[in-house]
Length: 479
Image 1 (cartoon, one colour):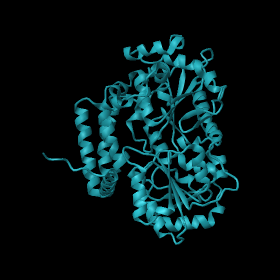
Image 2 (cartoon, rainbow, N blue to C red):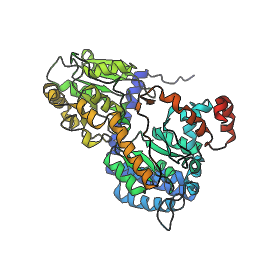
Image 3 (spheres, rainbow, N blue to C red):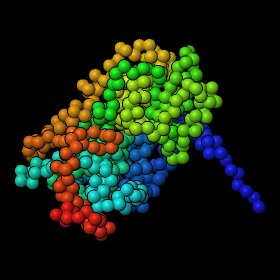
Image 4 (cartoon, rainbow, N blue to C red):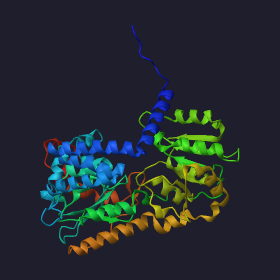
């Protein structure tokens, strides 16, 4: 009887990581990217012919969003314009249709993209209303004066859940919606679910290229110059007085290969000081564990120079940041990386690799840190250790990216939208943080704004599967 070959888990992880690096190398090759682009274009055309318009937009958008192929992008853009005019854009005016006429929402609700958004986590009616914690009420509506309430949605997948669960035309009558994406590259059909002529939807866009994509998409989507990283709780991340800087740098990321721990380990091998040490802070991700990283450190004779921390609390993360001369961001692509700004709040400058995409370019400056090529990381770390006192990341963060500053930016755009629509704006919004998920700074805000959840429950689509959850929500679900 034949037996399958068993493989040690760490060895299997290392083979998978090597495979990932090979795929990444192929993606950087123009011919490989062209083949992937053609496959996506053919897939988009096929989906469009089958009437699966959201799927068609999703596949065609990858050509610009992921592969960056200019010539194919022009063909994809032409296809997207035709799909847009048949779903969410008025072909005569070129502007957005009213939300009730945006057929892309219904198409999305029937797509495979929507199916994956409801796998667990929504086990009570209240959690459905709050999208499992990814929706937060920032301001209650005033039905007497017509002043709109404000909702914020965090994480890009939550946008799809929201559009699928809520009756958007009715909700837009009483609420302004703010989207806080978790990934860069806004050439994504998920945003088109919110294109509506009767209500502007605000989208946090800290990266200039993403803000430009929104402006080209239409006036219904309004960029706000901040992102998910701009809401760090200063109670958790702050300088620790008189702490010793015993780490050359810290990398905070999960243990997946796309976080590129190997670049840090290779750099540490080239550091001239044999006593220099680094810290790695992380958690398991899709089968990848710290054991793979630890073995790679040992094979480089770095076992005693690398400290690995797993699943530590925010207090401990703040301590490790304070013990480090530099906070690293070395993945090739991220969303609005919160850890970058947590480092700034802790007073730790950053080192970001030049091939990284996601961090706002203007946020890495002479006060916050520096950028370098991957093969220059060792020299950059030694320089920042010796010259780091020139930086002032904490002060820059307080002036440009703290929750208070971010709230002021958001309120300014909300006020502008209200005035443009002839609506009052007499009350500001609650101060919130990402801790790491949505949370109020004022602990009493949750009690004050809880009645709004009952109002929101009445704006859900009247699906039978949703209605049965009302029983578990008590009287508030019926009010």
